[in-house]
Amino acid sequence: MPFQPFDLTGKVALVTGGNSGIGLGMAEGLAAAGASVAIWGRNTAKNASAREALLKHGGAVEALEVDVADEQAVVDATAETLRRLGRIDTCIANAGVGGGAPLTEQTTEGWRKVTAVNLDAVFWTFREATKHMVERAEAGDPGGSLLVTSSTSAIHGAPRNQAYAATKAGVLAMVRATAVELARYGIRANAVLPGWIATEMTERLQGWDKFTEKAIGRVPMRRWGEGEDFAGIAVYFASDASRFHTGDSVVIDGGYTIF
Image (cartoon, rainbow, N blue to C red; front, side, top):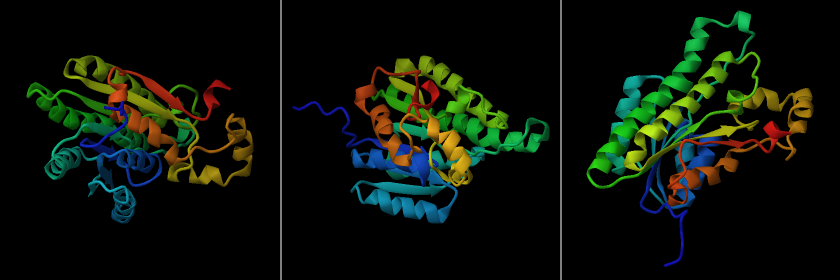
């Protein structure tokens, strides 16, 4: 039989924030590789549009309206995802928010809004998915992949973005701890660190000529990243090709951080 490590037929993947940007790019890759996919998002119309796009790949697709900053909503949505699709083999915690301001003007309310989505929600999402994966492993069906979308802000200075940077660094530590704890069950945990990507979060910057010249001009590949640039890494970490790859952080930024 030919070696087909990236074939995801029979596997189920969950992507939070999967209705646009990086999350949708990941979901597209997973669906094209044969996985059934569940996407979570707050916007009903965007969920429906993303679902239609993913259905073109021929597999099962579910779209749930979920506010990941609400712990009970995450608990309930995980149970509903399992009810609809039967299992979760890959859980990608991708949902995130920004919110920059000078440090002296940042508020506790703003700090907590960012940490709720970018850090707390990752913990809740991983915890609920892991309960299922561990239970499955103890029943004789080990394995599973956890992936979080961090940011290069976790590893270089991000002025006016202390909350964002802190959360994106925090999930790297969460991944390492989780990778060590759950390896005995065949469950892997990793992070991907995007650079400058053209998404709704960076929409204002995309129209700023000076930023394009100074920042994107420094990207060795000379362009903004796109959601589809994350399809391959999602498939890799969801597949058996990465079955011994855990606790890692992979930078995808067109070479920006090394230039």
